[in-house]
Length: 255
Image (cartoon, rainbow, N blue to C red; front, side, top):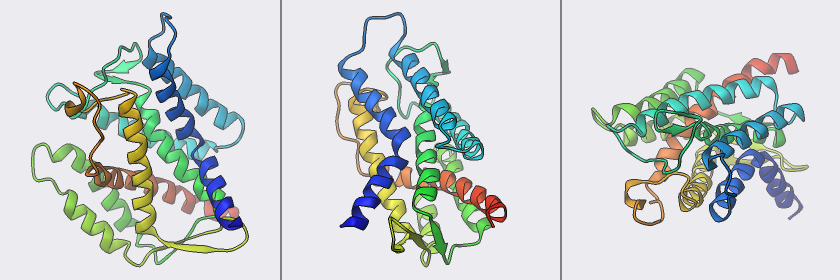
């Protein structure tokens, strides 16, 4: 129970960026003052303040921030594509000054929160891996997973092929983590599924707060289908591999 408590506390601490962001999403749905600043613009400034605070308090390193920002930019590019008038996979119903196309700029920080969680969990739980696939294999699967979010609108959707490839590549991979005093082990694929599940829960809370809406939610909120788990599973691969590569570069300096 002590180990489990430490694990829960460290996971909560690693999720601080996402937790603060989600709290603002839900909180501003129920109350937002009548001020000249649009809700989405407030969320953008709020997210920037969180990121600055994490750096100022040394809760996130500059290198980690750089990797997270790269993921942020790539995810924002995907958002611009997905919310374009030609695609319309989802939309943002509010007004915003800080935006690119149909995408308010705070949205990139939703993906930054995922990257921040992975980076902070890595340090909090001293993550290590057994039987990790070659980094070229992991990187290729991550990049193809990202590219498929664009290409599946024009050619075959390779989602299930990519999921199968990831399952084969990581089938023997175990993540070793230390909640407190004892090393614990978990199949890495299971950890991917669990992370995707909690992102899906946050997605439901966010769409309930009308941060963004899917076409079927235009007339009223409905739960996001479990099928979205596969999308989050694939999208997180890029963030995970970016952090993994960063840790490999950092390792010689630590040793």
